[in-house]
Image 1 (cartoon, rainbow, N blue to C red):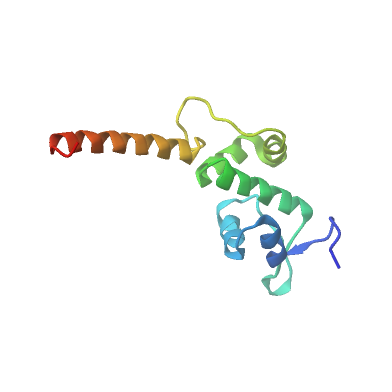
Image 2: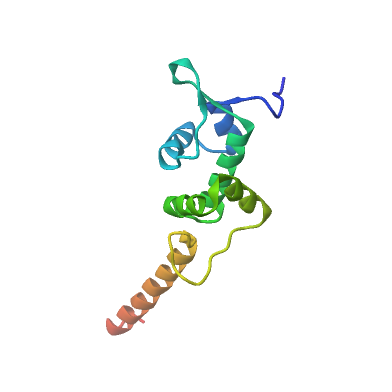
Length: 130
């Protein structure tokens, strides 16, 4: 029997729904102050539908958009929670030309890889391997 869309989720159900491990959700609680599941006696976590929505936004920003943890924190600080979730749902977040913690990691890594490959080519030529 499936739960209704409005039902609270346990940490295992939330983790399965989001496609992340349970320890990742616990870790995100320590890094993002706006991730606050309801805790019952004994510390058992229950995630509201709004919590799942916020966590899905965090997951997308970190795993698909390439944001860093600091970048997501900055985005939240600048926009607030409601705007943070709405903006992320409406359109992919883009970054300006200035490097910042919000710049996708993949772009930075791509440039670093290109620089390393160019340096390797120069070294190969100097060593007569080309």
